[in-house]
Amino acid sequence: MKEIVVITGANSLLAKKTSVILEDKFEIRFLTTSKNLIDNKKYFYWNTSKNQIDKNCLNNCSHIVHLAGYSILKRWSKKNQKIMYDSRINGSNLIHIACKKNNHFPKTFISASAVGIYSSSKNKVTENSPKNKEWLGNLAQKWESSADKFKKYGSRIIKLRISLIFSKNSGFLKYNLLSMKLGFGAVVGDQNRKINWMHIDDIANFIKTSIDNTAYHGPYNLSTDKYITQLKLIRLIKRKLYPYCIIIKIPKFIPKLVLGERYKVIDQDFEISNSKLKKTGFKIKYNTIDQVII
Image 1 (tube, rainbow, N blue to C red):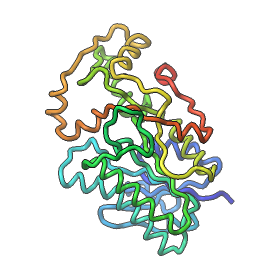
Image 2: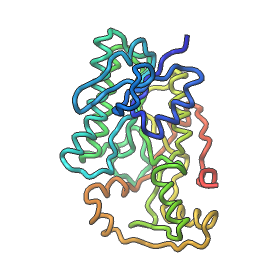
Image 3: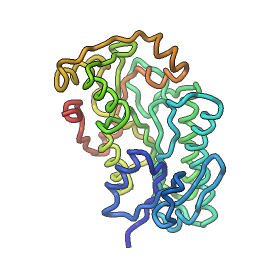
């Protein structure tokens, strides 16, 4: 009989990619807010803002992968900040309560987190580097602390401090490729700003490996061996794919005016160390931008 893995954030591309990688070996269940998906077999309902969860989803589960998180690029209104908090921290708490009611805790609890947990630094940022004390950093710290509750019950805890997720099908890279295909590549603010990144396939493979290998525990910086600067990325895409496109430099004050405090999310400028990740023996498949865009 296959072990059961419960994944939250069913609609995210990372959750979908992870489920595909895991489904040959494990039975996959999802906790989702999308009522149209609910079948009470593979998809089960929860609502982290209303403290609702179908604890049947967690029956006899061996591993939980908590990837749900309302986008932090949404407007930082009080309402949205609460949803951001609930989807992450209250999500962990609801799962914890449901596990207690079921009198069954998973072998492994894997929680998403983010490199936004760190303060800016001129040195390479490791898992032990100083933490960001502003709202974004506090959110990530509380997210990780909510995962630690499972330690008391013998669960192995893994925290995914994810850098910018690269995929040609979504997010940052998708929209840059689209705009450059249409003839314009934008460099926003500091052209030498460091971009730490990891391909979505590598993140999903790390999740699978961390389930299989019980030596994995604690936080991991999920990033490639080397960052790329914003300007180098845009120039590389131009050279490799769209030589006709025009590179436009957008002054920092414009996105700051549009995004307000949210600009801090895209304005992080430090180098991430993945030395702990490398020491596990994990092999990164996509370690250069060329491998991703070609």
